Amino acid sequence: MYDPLAHPQLSPNQPYPESFWAFNTGKRLHFPQLEATVQTEVVIIGAGFTGLSAAIALREKGVETALVEANSVGWGCAGRNAGFALPGSGRLGFSALKSAYGKNAAIGIISEYYQAVDNLKHFIDSNNLQVDLVQGGYLKIASKAKDINLFEQQLNDLPSTYASKLSLLSAQEVDTHFIETHQQFGGLYNSSSFGINPLKMALAMAELARENGAHVFQNSPVLSYEKAQNASHGKRYVVTTTKGKIYCDHIILATNAYTPNKSLPVFYRAQFPVLSSVLVTHPLRDEQLKFVKQAGLMCMDTRALKYYYRLLPGNRILFGGRGAVWGYNHDSPLIKRKLINALKSSFPNLDDARIDYFWSGWVSVSQDEIPHIGSLPSDPNIHFAMGYCGSGVAFTHTAGKRLAQLVTSKNDVPELPIYNTFPKDFPFAPFRRLGLWGYYQWQSLMDWVS
Image (cartoon, rainbow, N blue to C red; front, side, top):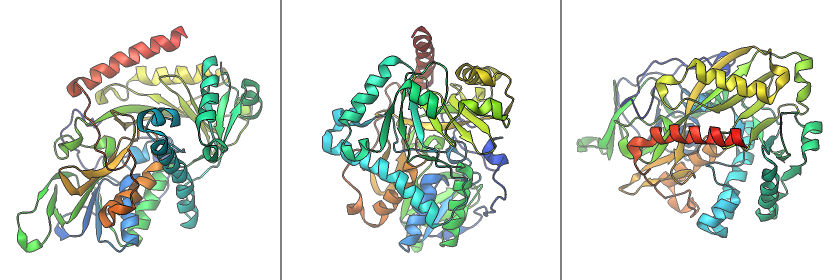
């Protein structure tokens, strides 16, 4: 498996992972490989949710746009995630954001997060995108008794505009109306969240971008980008791929956790690619599904090493959690077995459930645990988005629009810590994976002890 910290470049023509999404998406779109020298105003590197959203927004403004993807559209995290469209990104809630950046900034960030869900839903509906959208809501489950008190504090601290969208539930209410799971102490429910097939979403966005006039190139890994030396092209930069070149005035780096450390080294120390693994069961019998009371429900627990799950159309359970530490170990039978054991420990009635799909994907973690969208301090015409920390399905749509504004009108981007601040480097960056291994061991022990 491609590992952005171990492999200097991405190789083209790699297939989609053997995921539930890849096997249940239907027709695939054909986009050409870049095999010529072309010119455009903006080059977007990476055809995930962020890059596709930026391409669509730029074309709506009439800006010439070319999008280059190392493999197929949605090959990275966009096509591998669990499809949870939630009001948030990064890992900091309102209280933590307020403590770090002040009340006004925290309100601004939370507003962006909540609006992102509504904006994505409107985008899907207004374009009639067929992405298997399920409005089942999102339930955060308290794994420990003290977590209910934390939920209550969060509600009291959150501005009423957003607190009114959430419901605090007792353990009995969770069991009776939402889901029966092993050892829970209540939950916090958001009815506005929804689930999608993320690969269908990426492909639908790519088709829309192409229809709007964007040039989309697949299997075209970027080898380098640099200041253009040939003045006859009249462009600032040249982006070189395996078989072509694009001259442009702006570059958007939308590779997130899949950023190769040789061709795009600017983020090597500023983001931490971490594996998340997902499995999907065989269609379950009605008696096996009695523990799920809410159709399309999406859940996540509060453990340090979280598990997340949702009921998919077709009576399957998707269940995910932390993956391997190193990419070469992504499909380890031990990692898969740990995830299966966690599924069956959470839902004992699924002890005989068959697992049909298992895959992994990289998510990008930032040092300060918030996403970052902006322009490089060293070059205001090179823009970036990264650090969604595994919760970017909704916010990436907003991030793409903000990137388009950075190209066309920087004044439209709010002055918030998530915008126009370059992420801090990780200390002792070469030892990130070793530190992650130690963290996993410690948190596994703490979850077991508690």
